[in-house]
Image (cartoon, rainbow, N blue to C red; front, side, top):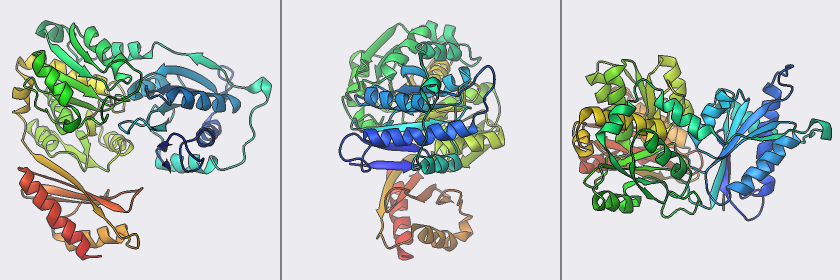
Length: 464
């Protein structure tokens, strides 16, 4: 059983003793810390005497319990709650801005198994809170708190139309061509892992004029039919359905709909790393500008950017870091290689729904198959591994020494150490929750990528 407090929020497994798991007292204290931070930042005015926070959740079975505790705690602090109910992470992010709220809480453990849940915390711009704010929220979750008197308790208002509003905002984008998508006559299979993608993705497809939708696991009851992370080994049923029903493609999202992966018409994987690459190709064809991905994402995005004569910037891992880098270079697109697409023309957060619409527009314009589109991009192979460390070792010291040994390669050290090599790259970064160093390597073949992992794993440990 696990309870993890970090600058990005609070997450853990449901049940068990408090303090070691995400139990009701832990949920209340976590919400209290965030609510106190919002209250401190809020400036009352005649039109809004107290702050409002948007709350939405994915479909996992613990969500209703967690949401009731979160809502009650916020009300007890004198904060109004705008309740989206079953929703998606990007929808909540958009609703914070659209409602003029002072923050948002997304109740989701993303791709983690069903026994997990979490509180993801947003600021008034609908962005994940900063590291500094996160540290302060943790501190405030531990202090004695004075709650609101009865005449100052917060209220709850249901806001049930935000998924529809989100979809309409996508349809209104210049780079989404509903007419072309509708005329293409796509047949699409969707695996929504029984979470809120089962509400949003079929609705988006039909709004785009895709009437032939094969729905797999789209009932949003939260009992995941398989590991919900959109990895190839978890998508065998979707792959089989695409072939069996002669679909043009398959679409899968994670439980909170901020990660996106495609299956080709022949049942092969398009590759989660290449979701962002394909969307970037479409966006850059029509609107030049810089693009951003994190250090652990495929080099193919840089290749596509250079093909269009545009700049690629690499950021530290994590959505908040990608968004910060996007703001610095005024990027037109960004994201992460886990299928996260950030299109700031809509909003600055990972959004599988806008990724679907942009991808289908690209496919409709290209008048080709998904596998043929994939063949237009580099065929890099990525390997991910981890290095177990002795608890007595200092991972920062190991990585610093590693970077010094490879100073001739001009290592990137914004997040661990990344080495760009003639025939690939390797990235080593420490875990913030385990005594391990994660290793990512990419090369032209899987064998070459595995060799990079082994070479630089041994190199790191040689400095221990």
